[in-house]
Structure formats: C-alpha cells, structure tokens
Length: 112
Length: 468
Image (cartoon, rainbow over all chains, first blue to last red):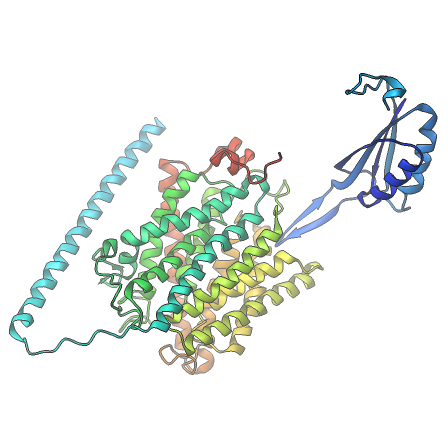
C-alpha cells in the first residue's frame, strides 16, 4: 500500500477528485493548508501598513491505494492538477504498513 | 515597596479628590444661596410683572432630535464597535467590540449623574458647568432650555449624551488589543469627567470661553470638530505614546480579521452621522437639511479622494481605504456642517481624504502604534475640519454663524486656530496625566502573556468565533 499526498491549487480540487474516483480510488481526505515552495507570496496593504504574506492557501489531498494503482493515481494527478504555472504543488508518496477499518476491524488492502 | 508607594499615591489622590469635591459643593451651595437672596426682593417688591410665556415646544423638532439621538447611538454600537472590531485580529474581536459597547453604558449613567451638569450646567467662570443639574435636577421634560428653545430640555440632554458616549469610544482605537479592561473602565470615566465635560462646556456650554456665547471667543463648531474629534484623536495619540506599541508591532502581521465587518461599521457610522450633524440643528428645517446634504456630499468626496490617493500612491484602490476615507470625510465636515454650502463640502471632504491618508502613511514611518488610526483620522480630520470651517463658513447658510476667510472674514480662521490649539493641548496633556494616574495605581496594559492570548480569552474568557 502507498499513501499519496498531493498539495494542489484549491480550485483544481473538483477536477482531481472526479478523475481519481473514475480510476477506482474509493476515498480521500482533503485539508485546507497553507504553505510555500518556489512560488513567492503576495503583498497586502492595510491603510499605511504593508505585509508580505508568505504562506499561500493550498489544498492537500491524501489517498491510500494498493501498490498496483500507484502509478495510475500519480499520472492522473499530474494530468488534472497541472496548470503549467508556478505554484501547482507537489506529490509525496510513502510506503504504508497497514490500514484498519474501524467498523469491521479488516486490515490491509481489504480495508481500503 | 512599589505597591506600597502606589497605595500611598492612591490614598493621596483620593484625599485631593475629596477636597476638590468638597470645594465644588461649597461653591455650589454659595451659588444657590446667592440666587435665592437675589431673587427674593423682586418677588416681594414687584408682583405686577407678568412671567414670560414658556417657549413653545415644537413636535416636529422634538421628533427629529429624538430620532437623531437614536441615530447617534447607533454610531457607537453597532457602528464604531463593528468598524473597530473588524480591524483587529481575531483574538481581540470581542474585547474591541466590548469597549465601544461598555463606553455606551458607562457614559449613559455618568451623563445623567454629573456629566451633563458639568458640560451644560450653569456656567462658573466660563470654565465649567456647576453641579446644580446633578442627576438631571432642573432639567425638565416639559420645558425647553436656552440651548434649544423648541424641544424639551431632556431631549437636548439625551441628544448630547450620545456625543459624550461616542467621543471616548473613538479613543479605544488608539489603544486597541492591549489595554486591561478594568483600567480601561476607570480611564474612560476619568476622561469623560475631566476632559470631555470641560471641553464641551468651553465650546458649547452657555458662557463657555471658546464658544459663541456673548463676549466669548466665538469659535464655530457645529457638531463636534474640536469637542469630539480633536479631543478623541489627540487623546488617542497620547494613549499610543503612553501605552507603547503592541507586542510584535512591525514584525508580525496584524492584518484586520474581518474587513466586511469594518465596512458594515463604517456604513453604519455614515448612516448615524445624519443624526450627529443634521440633528445638531436641534430643529427640523432648513438648517438640518443643509447639514444633511453637506454631510453626505463631503463623505462621498472623501471616500473617493482617499481611494484615488491610494491608487496613485500604492497602485490599488482598497476597500478599507474607501471606508476609512468616508469616516475621515464625516469627521471633517462635522464642525462645518451647519455653516457651509455643498460645493465647499466637496473641498472639505476631498481634503480630508487626502490628509488623513497621508497621516496614516506617516504613522507607519514614525513607528508609534495608534492601532486603528484614531489620531490619523479623527485628530487630523477634526483639525482640518475645524480650520476649514474658518475658511468656508458663510452666513448665507446660517445667519447665526459667521463668515469665514473665503467670505471676507479672515479673523474667523484665527479664532478657529486658537480653538484647535487649545483643544490639542488640553486633550493631550490631560490625557497623559490621567493615563499616568491609572498606570501608577492599576497598570494600563495586560501582561505579555495575556496580550499574546488576546483580550477575548484573557479579559473576558470568551471567543468571538467558536471552532466547534
């Protein structure tokens, strides 16, 4: 099993979710996050005072999938979350030791 | 040792205060006795003289002043409460709103007990009203006063109360996000009693030395440029100096947490200000109409001027800028609203938008922390408005007023400048003295830890926005 985390532009969420559901991802967790990478922040001014806002709003998607689906999920993310401009985000892939469904106690791939 | 010293200072202060109260009571008692003796002989000697008919109460005027009173109340809460409440950080939203709300409650009681009497009561040496009207004694519900001959005296009193309320509430913008609630309560009562009430008497009270009473200076202030805006703005500057900056000022982001709330508050201020200015005619007729028109015109011009100035200087027209500009325009037209025509009001408003925008830019360079620009908007806007009254006033609008520089009377500008200078010095020095007294005895600021937690939790044990 792999856990795939993708930090993407918030307005891309619907498109990404639909495409992932289509290729057989059954669930996901979505969080509103703030952060920065290569994309610079922006400036805000209130009356005479100016602030540089470094942390930009992004959306983080977490999905856990069987190993054989990993490449397909990554390809889908690359296709749908991409705008081509700076700030499109990143994908992180990690090995996962186990998943347990709380309702039944099932473990591993059957719990996905 | 330090606390012991403070307690001793407090005891001394209380003693001094006691002596002062005792002296005032003595003077009042003397005055009352003198009056009774002076009135006694004619009563016995000239029974033929018919008493003058009581001034006729006008229902239209009374209705307008009572409605105006409610409008001016709405300027403080919700107007100012939301205007300021939206500009602070989320952790201080309730604490900031609470300050405006509680000033409304505090001064409502203070005004009935002694505030109105000190400001508008029988004159003593052109400096202060006496305590003869303590608890609204002799302030009638069925007879008019010299201040407004066609409305009940208590209608005039309650209208003036709302001015006494909003003025200290305006100051809270200067010390936002860091003042201890208990000290704030004490400071507001002291400030209202020792700064607002005398200054209101000087400018508006019968016999006050700055105002238009017979043989006095003759400064024009229709609805409160000196009394309300210079006094609150300059006192705000004093607060910013004495309390010091907020923790993290200049390093951390202190962006407003809810600008829609601020715009709502600014709009509410604009709405209520028709009571403030047009209501100050204390009659429902031509003068109120004129004040209404110039108030709206100046406000609109000021919002546009601030927006354009900011657009040119920084590159973007901001919403907070437009709202701030509107408030600056309201402030500036206030003293002039009963004396100037619509074209003059455009100039006054446009000037206010530009000057106040420059003031908030200069503030960020100078580094003092007038958190919500009480001085930048009310101090500067009020000063410009009071001086502009000396430029643009004309008897064509109000025969009871005076002509300004542009209408052939340069002397009026000098008179206005004196009133501005006096208000500045009195408010600044007086506020520093009061703040030092409160600081000595109770401490002005919350602890560093409480300041980081925010006023909502540390002062009130509440949160504005629950996460659950």
